[in-house]
Image (cartoon, rainbow, N blue to C red; front, top):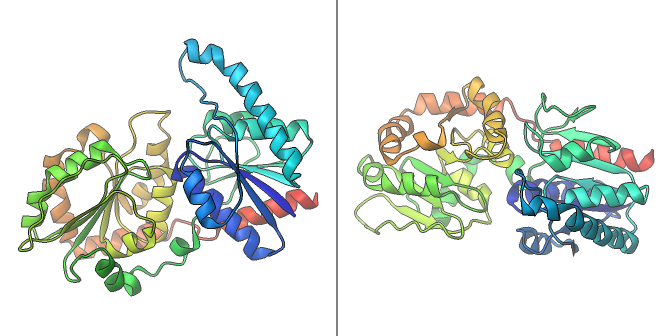
Length: 359
């Protein structure tokens, strides 16, 4: 079986794509997986690193507002669809699997033209434009959250990497903290804004660094490539470790007792799956999908929801130390979160892909 997986841009698309690729090959080692992305996305680094071939087409941003970019979109889309058809003619896949974003709509349209089966996966509780269009003619529509408004959708959950889905946080904690230069005995806060970082999170938590350290809390802060987080080193105080990017997020999760993060589908699903209590800070742009992603975990008691403009250094300094020193509450949050999330979504989606090919 030959499979073309289309998605990229950020970890929100590439992580489930790679998790699905691994599941397909694990289920049938003869499966040939090729990935489709754009030259500007994270996929140019992570897909080759994972050992899969990568084809590239021009990105087609879909403007949310009228303007010159919107007028240029039809021409850009035609060009990208032509490039995608050329990829299909070279790879000759038995099925195309798309994850939304700039690269997926051209792939869906090219596959429809070539009469190749289409499996679509939507990561967010509120679908993006590419997947809303693609769902109209896809053979299979799979979603991460049960109430996602796509017709005929099958709830499978969000495919996550095996290093995350099989993670035993307590068993790996000592190794994880040593890996990042953290102390073994201190409450630990993880801060991450995803693969691109998040300025609000960076400024607010770094601004509370002194308060956190005075409260005996150490911090692992994944700032993103342009995070600009600077906290003075002090061997006499709890560590505040800043990393621009972390490949081993399993170790980051294992080291932490609490995470402050955005509420992208991957962040919500991974934190909940490993039972890591979370403070979710939804991105204040888009169509509100991040807040919707976090709502089920928050409603179950597995996390807190803080609006972007409410996350300040004062809020962090006031709320986070009290939470991190409340071990019974953290245990309750961990149990509530981990009971919600499917850890086998990669296999579930892979089975749907195999079924589409058989049909």
